[in-house]
Image 1 (cartoon, rainbow, N blue to C red):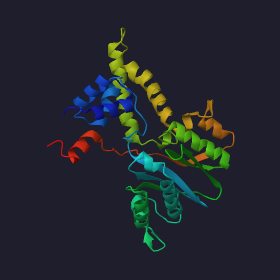
Image 2: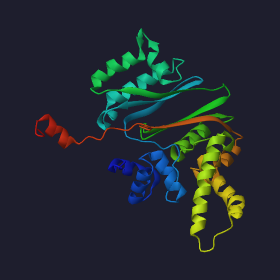
Image 3: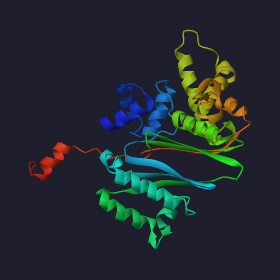
Image 4: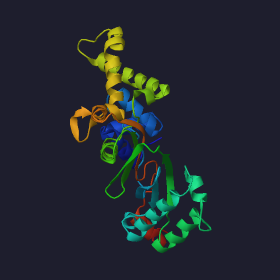
Length: 300
């Protein structure tokens, strides 16, 4: 299967590998981007990107809080022009104010929630007709905290990224600082204890293969047992520290980790979430010149 320029660009954006390396990786893996990423990493040509995905849709992420309940969600539209429209922004906030009154914890429950005699899906449909574009709700998350816990939330650039966190034994200032860090540094887990064993196993194997490949090219290769027993554990530890919230250098003071920052107030992280607009959606690439020509009958 031949790699398209769009596939090569996406793989390059996700791995920072060279264009020809990306093309070779895709064609060696039947144009499966996830397999191509592993292929590049094993050959030492790329780094894994945390929670990366195809980012192409327009829209906004947002959150709403009511007492001990917070909802974090994404609303998509078709164009970036609509995403900056005041009517669209108002609809996004309206959706949040409705969601936070529901018990919805996923997209289906949210869309079926009845508010003032109408399903939320119907409310969105009616309001989107005024905006003039298809509007869709996705990735609805509901977080509930205890009275003694604190919410932290942060919006980047009006909603291109939204992060939320629940902390125990912390005030709102500390919680918001941690939410800001999450938005900036995109952790995948709170701590090493939260990483599934299957992920540890697969990532360890990738790092081992990469390290063995590097060693094979060295002027003085080390024995394989030294690689496995001495070098591999350090590399695996470094890799997972970069993806765990508590082990990351704190964004407002990189001289200490988030764990150390929280130790000043003896605060603990209960849970967090981070959404970026368009993750997991591939937008159709439109050749507008060809589209106009087709509509005008010029391609006949």
